[in-house]
Image (cartoon, rainbow over all chains, first blue to last red; front, side):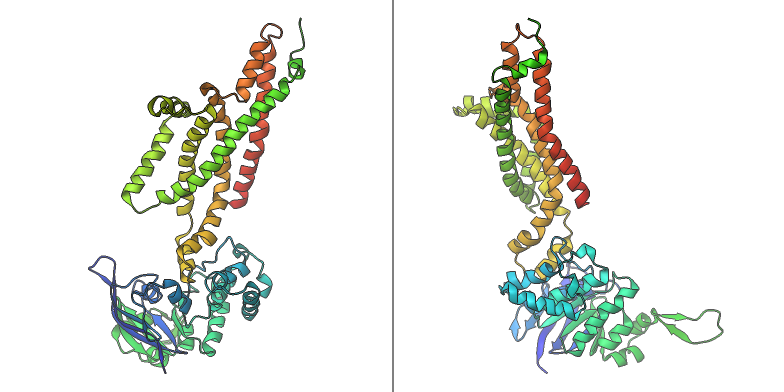
Length: 257
Length: 224
């Protein structure tokens, strides 16, 4: 499979002493879904933000479809190719749902409004929100906002979609409706890099897991390998934090949350 | 002759003259406010500049305007320009310059604070979609800023309307001055006219400013 994005030995630091990202090598091919796991502060989000250059790296190389974009001045183009959805569903409160979705295609891609509207409504329909097209973000639930944010990124037809803890700010019952959309995208072989704390979802959606700790890739494996036989002690410890021992039942079973 | 005080308003064209004076008041306030809005946006954006020198410059500008009474500012522009630069500004022009200088500083500070009150994630998600800096400001940041600004801009505007009563001191004939003239002319015929004239002027200011303060508090509730 052809690699879409190659990341070569990137490093990132804010104070020239501590490296938030320390020599990360990573390649993602068309249609692949890579999930990045790791404890808080391990650099997962920073890593994603470096991929579309919301943050600049201090060393290394970014290669998008064979083209070196590490220092490319055309950030707009890079971000058209690498879409992103954030944790805090940052819809624009001054625009309706439809206007939120249409802004980038009409302003950045200079598409005709009628044509873009048709696409937007199709995508909204797909995530079950067609009737909310004229609503304002404040009238939506968190889960609905996040689905709109996904549509807003999708309409740009990015080569890669980055999802940065998109369910972290949601109530548990809304997590499912958002992750369902992502699972469907994965089944259509949309290329995605996902940061998440939902382990069951990670296992279901990923082709590959990247486990980060202290800015380094500690383990890289298929989801089955990673969740059943993690190789490193650090990964074992991390996965154990999601296990709770049964209390007062006299059994040795573990419950997984 | 012991006339009923209120009749002074019906005498000749006095009421019309008061309205004319009021139009000068409004003209000064509206022109100054418009210019303050334009310059205030520029000042506000520059106040958020990362350049230390620019920051200090605008900080000093704002503080100096706040410390200075508006009357002193008016005198500085009107008499200062004439004596130091040989500029013979009309009272009207001097008033507009002084009020704009004051308004742009106040407006700038309002714009500055409303710009930083926009969630930083808004910039990020806009940049993340591939928008360029000027597009981010035009479609996302400025519209959100404007909405937050409306109440405080209206407050500034009503303050400006009221402060125009000072321009009489640099020779501009606005509503208060017209009233004073009417009272002076009728001093012996109708010694009780002051209360009626100034009462009318009070009502005139009220009619202009009250709807605005009402609108401001309505919008304040709506935005919050």
